[in-house]
Length: 315
Length: 281
Image (cartoon, rainbow over all chains, first blue to last red; front, side, top):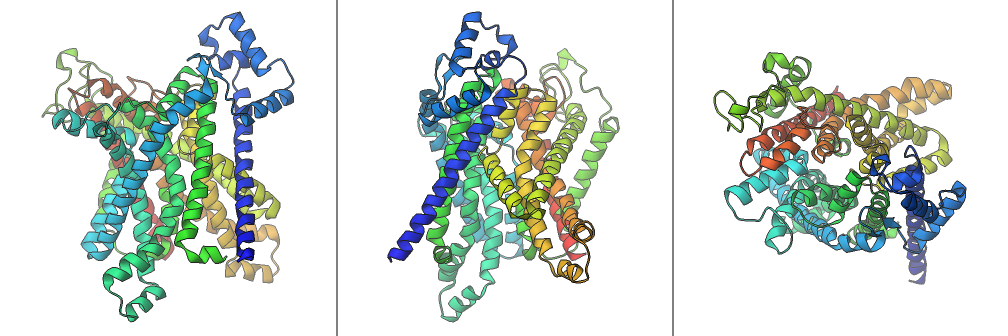
């Protein structure tokens, strides 16, 4: 047992070191990306040449970011600030970026988690239904998945608003609070994702149903339901689990669209506003937070895969 | 993403005669190509001509898709908009694929150290999921059609690189490569005559599948006001303009979006069909 423990501890350390490395690189990429903005970097931070920043503001930014220092000093200072959780100041909103971004994180996470859960349920339902039925069910299932996966968030959101808010009046078109306001945004994010996950699950379910372990389970006399839900589905969910890290990332970028359309406060809308205003510190703040969330999510999906697949634990 | 799914699914798709889906996709692809090359054939009107008196006409016999706030015919605009969307989608895919080929070949062909470095670099890029990389790029270089196209291309590059790397590695360990090595071919001969042709053929499939995704993303950027701007008849920009009138004129948003969905589905169905055919050829 201690050997197993030591091994998983070593693995965990390696994973964490990898995560820290990726974060460091993300910080480096964004640091140099900002230096690519043409013209005076202080002006760029203040919203570009069109913003007509006052000389005092320019001087303040130059001092804060140390633009008059050598690049390597600026870079190390930036890393130092990031390590202490200081993401700088938004000049468009006149407030610190870190508390701003953190205050928006909850709403977006709620949206992403609900959408991911719903997408999993839809995909599971579609995959099991379409592999059990005949060729018609499988064709209908795969067509539904392809169309769902091709739906752009902004069009799906508008169509759902037209049908459910304007024509039927069932759900509000604006998602400021309350459960009813969450329905349409979550559906918008979940349907395309369910299309992707469904395709993956159906393919791996089909391969699982043809594999020897299912044959042996059948030979042992297990019920069809037991074979499908306990043996095949466990196997079939593996690729979809590892895809969930990617899915989470795509949900965050979907949140940019969905939060804007449903006028819902969150990271995505904050990001879009910041991009439109060229509010560089906020953009970097959101990017860093999303990178952290994404890395945590990949660590989580990795752990989930090990939980579901005993083979990975032995390797 | 579609591309990754397709490469995953190879062993479970059987060769069969073209089905109804493929036939419909073929007809649609033809329609989109004609729309892009010669929109006048399908929609003789001027996509920018305004008729204020017939503004906000719902779909009827004269205006199949209705008219917008200035009385411009939506059908004409949607057909004429095909060239923007297809061109942006194709250009973005070309950029993404070129970068992907470069990174993927570096990682797949040039030893462990390069592979490790490129892989770490890709991991870093994956930490900017989806449109995030594109948005970062737009903050740096400002909004517009050109930046949006490059931005979408950049966002898709890491995915392509990973697929190409995997493809190269699997081809490299194939029996015919081993045979060529045994026959005494040089490293470069093997790379150029055996490995590359077998890696590049699936790229055609990747490109077809990728165009759909690129069109959706580029339209998203236009919708968000960061790409093409109204009154350009670009689909995303049309949807963005229709947003203001969503309570009264649903057709302004519905039809441009429908065309985006149809192009994306067409690309997926055709890409998969080509993929199947190539595997069984």
